[in-house]
Length: 162
Image (tube, rainbow, N blue to C red; front, side):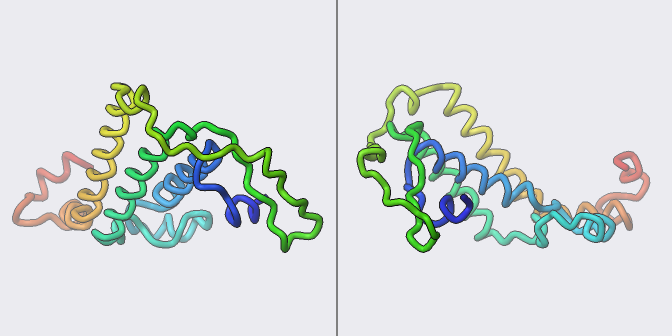
């Protein structure tokens, strides 16, 4: 099934949109935010790099992927059930019946595009992604300040945040 989902998936429909969103969530939430030796040793299911290691370009790629997901979700064919085709290399794969594959419709659904709740939620989530991108750049400085104290933040002020 994984070969089918990754191998030859149509670029529209409910399954495509769900797997695209799940991919984004997994790539972000599957990482620790910052370096912590104890977490790295204990958690073998986390992805190896950390969010603070993301470059500006990688955060931009995440934001662009999120925007592309929004554009896919407001299409008229966003909720159509379209199963991936069988991959010929898999033994026992059947030929796909063309009548079972709905045609794509990339027209914008005006009701969804103008939905206040949808647009507000999208905007809020995009702002959260940008916030976490900004925070990932400055987190090491905050961590250093909390651990060691700095001239900018006196140690006694930092202790209140522990």
